[in-house]
Length: 252
Image 1 (cartoon, rainbow, N blue to C red):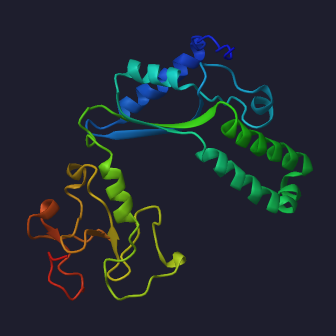
Image 2 (cartoon, rainbow, N blue to C red; image 1 turned 90 degrees about the horizontal axis):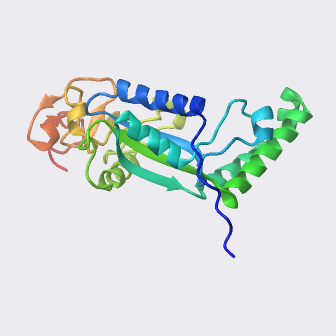
Image 3 (cartoon, rainbow, N blue to C red; image 1 turned 90 degrees about the vertical axis):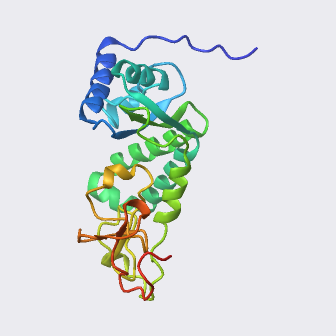
């Protein structure tokens, strides 16, 4: 016989109110053409309760929601869901690596917080890995917007951004700098030739107009906010003036 599936239950009123308040605030803070992304650990089962041991020792007050209760709250907030992605085994590998590194630093962790702390977190990391690998845990990512046309109709812009942001040089001859010489590494990364930032504009070019870029020569944006002069017609017709590439501006 197939396993008996748990019956769906409505979440308790305080939890529902808290989730509703969260997405109400997201809608309130979003610009009309803004986009929000929720990245959360959740469960593939109907709404339930947090493991008692984790709630007591690791995350007091923590809760992993089901996808159904989150989606219902988003519907009540009148936000558009523009994309959903479910990461099933990805986080199992993340937790496996965290556990490996944690065990490699056992003496340091125990010296700081005690052996009891180390044992609890070792058990937590190992059990959560199994929760993702063999249990009901998952990570879901929900993209939301106030307008249905806030993002492109397909995911092509994501691959385009990842491909362009992986570059670390626009073709110049300067050596790649050391990591500690690169500021603001959370962004796409500087051109190693002319110190400009390679920044994709494909998500919504209108959001970036009035800022610098992109350069029609190297698709980059000045790191210091220096103004660009208008030239050509590509992506708003901006150029950094050749940025010492040795090739004419506007050519690629």
